[in-house]
Length: 269
Ligand code: SF4
Image 1: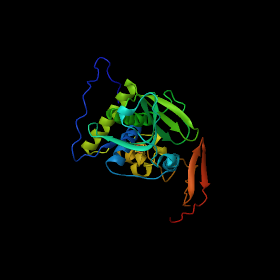
Image 2 (image 1 turned 90 degrees about the vertical axis):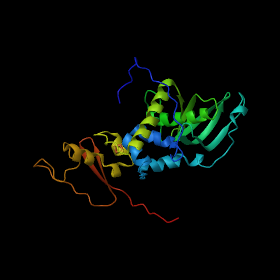
Image 3 (image 1 turned 30 degrees about the vertical axis):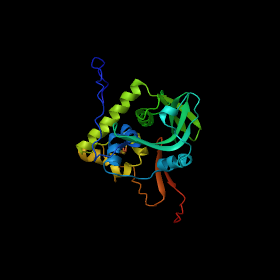
Image 4 (image 1 turned 45 degrees about the horizontal axis):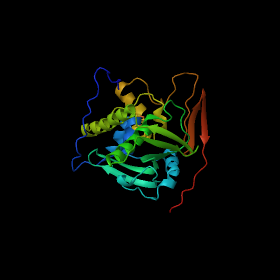
């Protein structure tokens, strides 16, 4: 998407009220769309889901916030010295057409802060966190503000490092968030799945890579870069066939690493 033209400022149009038959958009889906529009479409429109090591780790990071606890007082009762520590709060707004389950809501001098738990350590990037996570948090802030709370920033809590990254809901982030919400609604209404990303490092980490098949779809569209040739092109090389079900194939520099993972026993609950 190209940068906005500064000579043509955004027109602040209000969101139209949600029609009765449309479900509110979850904040997490706005995160997925910001990561990749095709991922947002697959999850929101087609209800696709697949487990990956990252999703399992993410659920583990959220285990402490899944049980509701504490109380979120009504906005008129929040004063400068009010102490709030409310876990697992779900709020929605029909006017914004949004819904979010907030891991934790804290108070700060009469304002409230949504705190979103994330797995792993914080990335060392300019804004302290990646755009999809900041956008998801901003959706939570928008819903809290819509309910009448003073809310101009939130916190991303990275469980592995126990590190809090403050995120200001500034003009730039609000615009990014509004664009993501509009973009997801647009592709959902259009009913046409976006094309996959081309040769991007996001795909190998995406939990839906096995459903999306980005390399394969791109190859069928453009017939340029074959995804995985079964026969190698160089005469002196040999193909490698990996047949073990618990095997993992990885590439480290110029070395192909084949690892046999230990079998994991799965017990019925
Ligand atoms: S595999 Fe890549 S293109 Fe496909 S949904 Fe995931 S991030 Fe998007």
